[in-house]
Image (tube, rainbow, N blue to C red; front, side):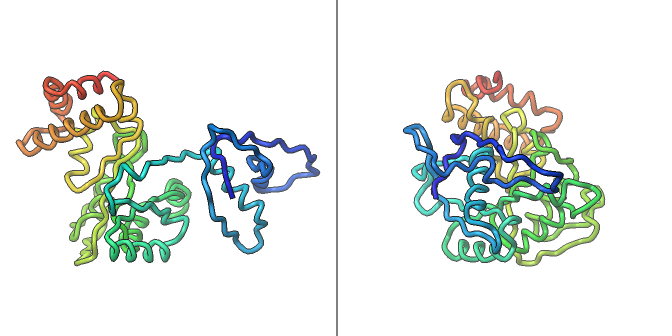
Length: 284
């Protein structure tokens, strides 16, 4: 099957409905165009679609076409990675904890990394009157296995309270966590020798957020820049330099005993004096 993400024109429904029927409309009524003629500018993606019992193949294909047409997809050329260092991303909640554990063991045995994508978590943990807290999912995902997981940013575009997010970080990363009600950690768990999971901060972050991110997440973390790096006027490489310099300046200032929450802006301004890439990034 071939899906042309973002290039299909939605089809209109012409059949009149009688009465009211609860639920959503079939995917094949929207972005499914089996006779679509490809253009030279199209990006082709091949999918292997295995349907659930009772689901027509064309409806499953149409669901993939819908997702590829309205979702956000990021593609990285393999030549950006060193040989053997490719990170595999798995949607743990959607595909299930059993599959996640199986992949985690396989990748660990074969020297690869597994990024635990938490797509669909909002259906479970965003509403306060149903579902479960992300803290419970974090514990389950650490038990299931993996190398790093996205947990929000606190200071970026994704919501998240500081103290509660710090509780996520502790539960995912540390071996022994002391009870701390401010972090919503109500008992003292001891993970013994179970491997930890590195927290990933991603979502609307840029160089001005680095003092806070350094203070919140510490050393053992991943800071993932997207548009915050792609928007640099000089290009991606200069912004990577800006991010690295800003991060190193914050780490050095923290190690020297400076208060990142109070002196964060001053630390970044000082680093701008000897890094033109950072100075330009701060003006964006």
